[in-house]
Image (cartoon, rainbow, N blue to C red; front, top):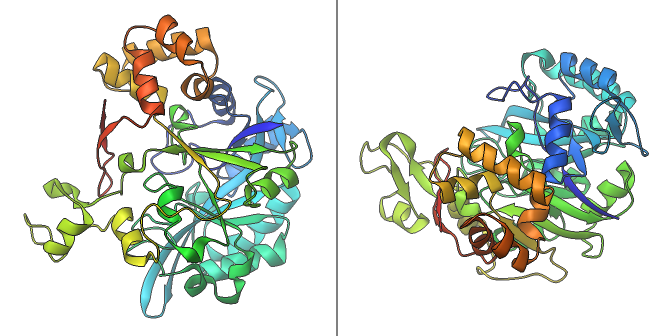
Length: 399
């Protein structure tokens, strides 16, 4: 069966997250988005974990559903953790995704992780062990769990980031690298950018929303063809098999917050070439620029742009319906007018992802409000104008 899976989200217990990030609201929004399988997020947080135990019940093997409410959506127990540690004379900061098939596995794992940080301080806790030690802890304590480096290119908190990461997975994990079966590409890169590194040929490239508020669910996701169970989903996700891992749903990477280089305070936005010409310094204040994802990939790539490896998993790029409507209606995405239009369209045509990806062109152009169908078709064709994001600022989108 075909499954849309978004496995990196947060709860209201994570910093800078909406108070609506509760499991019932996540299920309601997932249904409207067209997401079949959603990560719970934040299973390391003790209060949220208690709520998950109370509100979820077992469904298919290793997956869960709500005891009451929207029971059609399935959940996988997931979390993200921060590791801050020193390695080879530098301070390193990485984010890592953890997937678990049971509360028993979560209990074993959190008992070990609690020795390396205070789990109740944040839904995405900070641990003092190294990223490699984290991988070893998971393998020793709960080997049925999966460890996946999160948004691997972002500058400050990722395994390959320009300022606190490494130049390869092997540099970070050593001989343990063999147990890393997938990496998350993040909003500011897409598979095509990652294909430029032959060192990533041995891992699957997955995509998730990293949602901090419910409307952001599904802005990136994975489309699989497999049975509905933890083992089958993780197996398909890490398989690099195009018959099981059908495609990823991708935000346009130019729209991500760290695609270009820059300095937000001075509103300096630079391409990699411009940064090199400026010797990496902001021309306004003279401070170092934040090196973005495109620049970092350029620095480490051993293949030209446009290279496609054998058996590459395809990608389909989109913009969230809320953002498309904001451009068409010339409003901010969170306004009442945009949200009212969003819910009217979903009520009439079904889940958002079906509308964006699969609704026939004739229906889009003849049945949707003026301008909306045309805008969706432009997005499908990649006919989007984006001023790239930089230094924590999303890109500006137009048609």
